[in-house]
Length: 239
Image (spheres, rainbow, N blue to C red):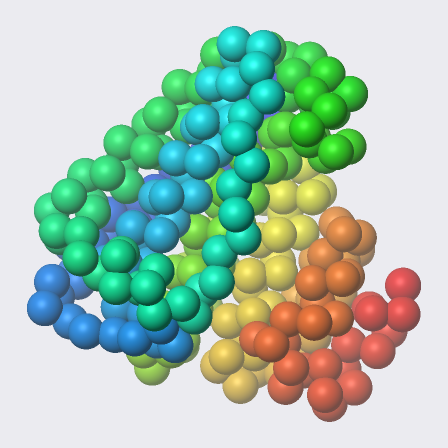
């Protein structure tokens, strides 16, 4: 895959997640409440936006030849974090989501080809490829949270439809195996949330075959516990 093809695929994946956030923001009730264990729609979007902004900061550092700051791990069940995200105005949440996606796309287009694919150029990546980190922050992480939102709000059909659409889009874009594996992994998680355990196991198996790094996630992810506990993932986890 050429660098141009890679950029196009990654840009398309970022666009999927950003567009789905806009759809959700339009439908969301600004007065809807949630809690750290079952987030409302707008805090989900605000959280995804924050992660995109972190990646934009990293990309700007790469462009300028600097080492970006370290970002702390996020406790998704933190009451303080949830209160902070819930306090953001509804119109600002939607607007900032779109702006952060645009900033990520702008930096994606400006980053050097060699920085995108050669981890050795940026030791802080610790051997990871920059393009894949962009996919994590711009696609895998946000679509995963959107699917989780729908499952926990009793809209499993919507969650499955979203994840299946993301998977089909990754195929359409000709995304690299690692990215398509992430899309399959998200599909597995929402299948599990919908009680579709055999399809979930099949999606996990496909995800691990495309991206072996996902095996460790599948072994500990609480969303996949019903599938894992039933022994359906034994072969996929054995590697």
